[in-house]
Structures are given as structure tokens and as C-alpha cells.
Image (cartoon, rainbow, N blue to C red; front, top):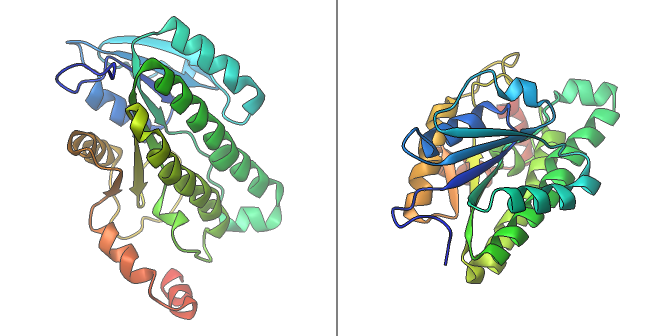
Length: 249
């Protein structure tokens, strides 16, 4: 049986990427003063405590890029918090394509965190929930990983990897009562994108959080934010690269 209660409410939510605006917004929708525990994990626990959440909150150290530490982290965290039934993967690194062109090491960093680190965290989280009897994992992907664009193809490549893995893993763990929700937002107004020019169909972290909670209630495997991006990206995928490059400019 899944640890999630009879009303579908999470008992304890583990957020990986505790300073993520989107991640915090999702947790805020899931956990309130009436019940539920938020476990915020990231590289700087002091920063997690800037904006308080309702309900019981714990702060842990977690480095997505240090994959050798992940097995111990998940084993100890799930042992210490046996009510964890929801894991949110919200960490990530974003550098502009111009910066990456000047310093390829930035591309390595994005690949290491956004794909390798995320893959490690996703697989460990799924393993823990499977042995526990079920649960749910929310994975933040991006529409950038669906079609290469000249303005962000390295970032897009790092997101494409975790998008592919989450879809495949979702099928393999379904029999163990573990659900994976893949989230594909477009441009979101966050600290990470503050220096970037807004794109069409821009949304707020709260909009993404609402879409995630609604999708979990429906039992969806994939959710787009905003929902219109499903059809927009479907059309973009059919366009030749020369046209996509012009749109990107």
C-alpha cells in the first residue's frame, strides 16, 4: 500500500533543490498547517530557511553533483523520516549558451547536475519508495529538452536526458505503486531566469505548482505548464530546423 493517506495528501514531502522557486511553490501547495512534513534538501541549508513554510519543516544538506553521496543520503533520510511518500526533483543549473560557448566547463556542470545528478537522485528515490510500498516522484523537466534551439541547446540536452529517463522509469516502477510525474514547464519567472528576457507563455512558480497538484490528482504521467505548450511544442517538432532557428532568433 502507498504511504499517501486516504485523501491523497502527502504525509511527508522531500524537496531536492530546496532553494528552487518552483519546488518551494509545489511544497507549499502540498503541505499546510493541518498536517504534512516538508523536508528541504540542498547545498546551503541556511538559505532554505529564508521563506518559512506552513507545517513541520526539516533542513538537510544535499549536493546533486556529488553522486557518490546519494546512496547514503537517501538511506539515512528515508530511515529518519519513514513517512516520506513524495519526492520532488527541482534542482538544476542554467547557464546561457553564450557563457557555455566561452567556457565549456559550464556545459559539463549542467550535464553533471541536470542529468547525471538528477538521474542518480531519481533512481535512488524510486528504489526507496518501491521498497516502502509506493509513493510519488515529481521530476522537473523543461520544454527546452524537446527540440534543439540555438539559444539553449546545451541546457536542453541536459534536460532531455532526465526527461527520457523519467518516462522509461515511470513504466517500470508502476507495478510497485510508485508514480512519476514529469513536469514540462516553459519559461518560468524565477531567480534563475531573472536576467533573461521573458518568452511567450511565461508563467509563475505558483502556476506550475497548481498544474502539478492537479496532475497528481488526475493520475497523469506528464504535465505541461502552461497546458497550451503541449500543442505548441507538438507543432514546433514538425518544423524544419531552418524555421526553428528563425523563430529562436
